Image (cartoon, rainbow, N blue to C red; front, side, top):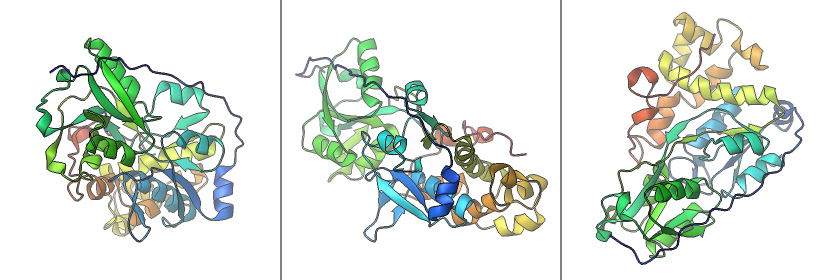
Length: 338
């Protein structure tokens, strides 16, 4: 299928400024007694606010986990909704303590923005959402098509590489937020919507006719999503990194929100180390011994977070796939907690 558009996309890369960052985020968070966490403006399964103002999602659970570990209370979080264009500036300037907003870990971002990625909570890839009535079954049929893309993301470069490799052309129609991108697609301003595949499933359920759109089979890039902190504060970087790892390790060790209290007293050595009744993992992070116990009891392990937010317990019903544990067909893996 040949579409009416033949204009190839032009990718403009903005120059990043290196920033000098003061250390002491842990002390700041303790002093104000809350965590300031940057999230999306609303993305089902990752960070969204309900009608009562309560936030939930896989990214939100990272914020809650950090608050539980540092402050002993997962509810002590103030959420800052940010567009893709705003997110890095908000973190660089100190407006937020952590960015947990479906953000892809790339070499450029990791080396030129004054930021550190603290791990991966969801392994994703760029995909394509099209209307069924278009009759397209593969991304290779999208030559000359118009793409709805959210500005400030890594998606445009990913599809530019793909279309150039396939010797195809496309036209870009950009929007500031994911909601605007979905609306543009729904109103017919583009032929397909492209983003991380998980986001496509989230955006599809927000369409007036979700069944009228399909996600094509192609996944054309690597998009590891995870939380981000400022460079220059290794203590805070370590805390956020090991909060992510504790969630993953909790699943591996069989520690859940339901059994953590029991296993803390009578579990196996690895479970006791994680839960703080053996060893000194908390002290090495500058936290109390029960830091990971608070994560498990107040937020749950990775599997619990995945299933209720994006998995079978959610409207998205995404399968674990490569986000399963390394010993269960996936690539999810925490370094040893000992």
